[in-house]
Length: 578
Image (cartoon, rainbow, N blue to C red):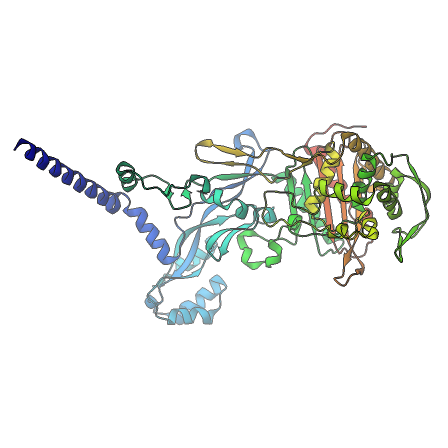
């Protein structure tokens, strides 16, 4: 009898416990979390993202005062006004469509048709209104038309570093990061991490009760665990980026060029200090730009580098001890091979010249001479070890490999033309990364654009500099740096900076016509250089597509290179080296 009473009491207690838990759960859902669920439901009904949460993206901003920190917002979340309507409530459709069309710059007939549809569902008329537009719409005091607010992505610096940032936009699976860092780090910015996968094994009763009663901020799914979003801190220096973009725009405008690219890299670490393209877009208004402008051409487009590849060929000869800077070569002005005659750019013979003078005078014949000494197999191996024909692994989406397929053909002429940068294609990032290896003593670094990701509680995932290869020796690097200083000293007077040893080389490359030849009198200009050559702090790449009215990059890009280099010398307070 006593045992029966215990069993009855136990069952009764269990029923009361479960009833209490259910009541508690109902209380949470109906009262404590009612507001949150209500707002979510309302947002879904109206397609208004009131509940959007996404991490911030920051530029480096080291010259700001200590009070304002050393970063600046590059992307954040902001509340924007939207105009909405419930068409069935609109009684003065003719008048309101006329007024709204004027305020919002929309088609009056389409607005009129919307109001006449008689729909009882809330419809969005326009998003991301200005404060003035929102005020004007509210001033209409029209029944069935009003203003609400939604959270959306905001880019405070407009188009600055747009190709690096990308944008927050629509895809086939909804709204998410598109292009750039917004895409590459979408999981971190939204708080979705694969590392927190939930076990497929069923948990115990206690675990199930914890899950049932949970008020936590994370939500488990079969594959992901949703946590608080992380913030992304770029390596991009806002001050350097702003100046570099200004100078790129100026030089493109001066020569009426079709487009261009600028990259500035720290050769010691591989970090990207600035990266920009023209034409570009404003991520706040991405829908008004051509999709082709979204591409980051530094990593997603290739070009034939031309003479800026000659120092790469020279590095091979120096590293194999086939030549020294003083080795001489007799230039006849041309080379005949396989029925082809390859000439210097100026179609002149320069007689006996040193290896340094080959770079100074940018002689195609001299580059081919060095390649012949290096040998085809070594040439290919060096090209691969320097990262050509393969992705750099940069933390940006859509990177392409480049194209050195010609070097696998076994045809000697392909190696000879590649020695002066023709018949192979590289990305701007591949090329500047190779120059950084020249600058830093022979180490090929993995380039990166994100300094760190900061998670809740201050946990950080910091990008560490990574050496991916050592394609040539420090001794080779020292010799080649000296040779590239002589190139600037003796060839590019417009790039010289008094008191500093500046290293650099230009390229004037032909553009393939898609038919096995090249476009006539149309070129790509590029300039790569670094300073101070004895201990480089930065490497600069400038590229200009289809400039008008000028033939050689030495004339078109040298002044702009000098201006950017001088800015960086002042910015970093680099003392004179001469």
